[in-house]
Length: 493
Image (tube, rainbow, N blue to C red; front, side, top):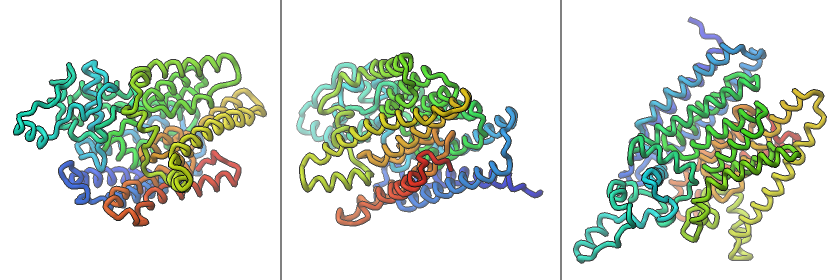
């Protein structure tokens, strides 16, 4: 049987997706908690992940161009949903392969477990840091030998701390309260109610969030008159499989709300788009930056933005009231820094001038982004004034909102003090609709972050300490510069 060239592209993408998941699941057993960090195959896994990312991005770009050239027509409803169902089925098989895998080089899920337990028991996750409840076995043994009683636990936490002892002892940064906003806590609580202190609960919630995101993205593509092939960019991406299906990073909870906001933008339902972004910001604050892009210059649009912000503030109130020196959100804003190339360079240069260099750079970033958002909002709205028809206007406006969002998120990742690879996945719902080369490239190069775990074993003077962040960021800076020189910040693939 001869396989046509069109089907061959699908076979190649399917093979890459399934093979990556299978290898990831197989190697994950060597990343179990009880295996010392530097006894784990860090470089092997990093090589696997980066290779899969590069191959996948190459496949997507070439397959998209080939399929668009071969079939320029907009598929009918049945063809669209048949392709979407195929993409969904292959991605679901890949996720099933990872369902029983060990999380690779990440342990944030232990914090999710504890937060979910506290929230599900109607307690306040922003009140106490985990180290108030965790007592290491050797410390407990010493206290017993000395016949000294440990400090009593706060009322209501006694049984919870006992049942969640493993999660408490393995929670990173246990001396600070949780950084995760209230709507994220609702997701953690749901996972706890499904399977208390069990990774299965988190995997189920993660999968539910991803399926909802897939559905909203599919409807967004259909509403925009595009082909469902774009869904593969999210649903089959190796970084998505690793960061959401394997390690269950809480950013997965953002995906349905971001995809819903995109659907509402394309459907010209401004109020619901702002509402979706407001809910997304109650999971992670950055979607607040995108709300001005949707707003028009009229009272109604301003009221929509105000409503979204009001809902966000209401949902964030428990966390905002608990802000203080030991609060996770405070610490994150003040001194969190990891895998940042541009920030580290500027901060390092200013440190020779002032000991407050980190604070100054953070303030500079905030000021520049405020100016950038206002400037983009004004400029992008002017660019659609020449539309020849109302339909063209709405189409152009939706595209420019998406392009502005992609540029904003890409630059945000590049200049933030913290550049975790799962942050790059914020881009994918937007890129599904408007594939942008710099953004897609970032989702590929970010896999080099995991080489940082190996670099930690080296002397601080080693150039490899700089290499992961540099390799993640420099190719994307070059791609962005190339796009801007061409005068197309939102250039499609």
